[in-house]
Length: 233
Image (cartoon, one colour):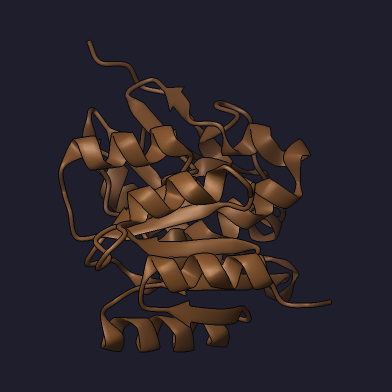
């Protein structure tokens, strides 16, 4: 099976090299470009599966490049940017960007979001599990990998995020430890329930008012865990 092909468009040389190396280590085929003009030519010759592109490029910026790409191609585009202005994000998403991540960023988060976008494109039937959900005072956006509690963004690792999503997507339903391992870690972790126990403890420390007496993530002895929604009073 061929690796997914990512076109990386980034003018910062060191960042471009570092990202290319890490993406290749993660199993992707990577083509790099330092500017949008060359990137458009690369796309013409060899369309990628996904474009990872800085907005603040020299010459033609990323937003203009996105306009040109979306007139002829449907592959996903994820923006990298140092800009923090909300209108940049809104405009980028309006033009057809599939995701948007602000520098500096954690590499595992970036790779997780790349995987999520590619999985969503390849498996439209899975779209429901990538729809943002609101459960009481908790909101989860699996496309953006952002979870907020009472309006405050939670600082979650990729595993913690996936674990919370797996529990909250069907509130009050008991989810077995084996099911959580399969959904969050994969088959290679079968028979290792301790990874679930540890991450549940870490997750409770971030979302429970009192982690010693959890009211959101409830243990159902001999069965697994269930998520109980809470609502602001």
